[in-house]
Length: 353
Image 1 (cartoon, rainbow, N blue to C red):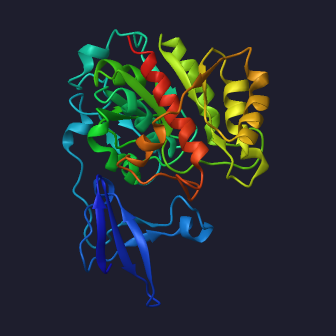
Image 2 (cartoon, rainbow, N blue to C red; image 1 turned 135 degrees about the horizontal axis):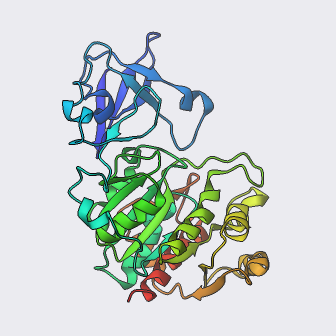
């Protein structure tokens, strides 16, 4: 390793010197591999680089061979510690304390709770929608308590997300569910995560989306965002109020993502079995607005289509503490995408009790 480039919550970016004299950007998670220092040898996984993944762009530190992290505490072998194993049966599997486990200080709040008491929950396909949804909420509710429930369709460590780190005080906390880990609270599944967001973090609005790195195969069903429909079902089951953020774009050159993405149409139109408010932003340019209206016709009987004013949302998006980017496109390059996410956040505010 040569130099440490920068750090954010849970992650260290470094520049590693390769045997051939070249260098590569690498990312280490100190909680898993220890804290790298200049001069350390590092074992790297370079799969994301070889595949040219846009979300990653990093080699990942697998180990510091000459300076291994400390052994886990002995309490992991007793009922006094956590028992949630995530990234299960991989070499770096962390063992964590679930919010509702016996040893958790939050156990009493969660042991018998069975609903989220009308919590508005915004569901989104991509992690890049998160800061835009927050901006839409903040435009009308500057002090609302917002929690993020991160699912495991993309990155598993919450630490990978610089956006999440930069949001800071905008959120009352993050709950990582399923195989995802590294949030302020850990939960076994989405249902438990929503309950923790409501009753432990005392959220007034929650946002459910996967971590960075959507997986898609270009087929009707082969994409990680199908979980958005399952999130709608979970929210309704627990007595929440689901708000669907639509993936809308006039900039994506791929026909399946132009207008309303087929990811949204499949997740909300085929996977979601309960009713949600699907938010359609006003102010789209006419051709895009027409395409969006036509695409949503088959969903009108299944869901409530809600048209939301976008007045003031552009300014809210530009004031966000995070540089907005989706698929390499910024706010001006894919304005409709971020506007749609912000409108979903704005609508969630109207559902506050």
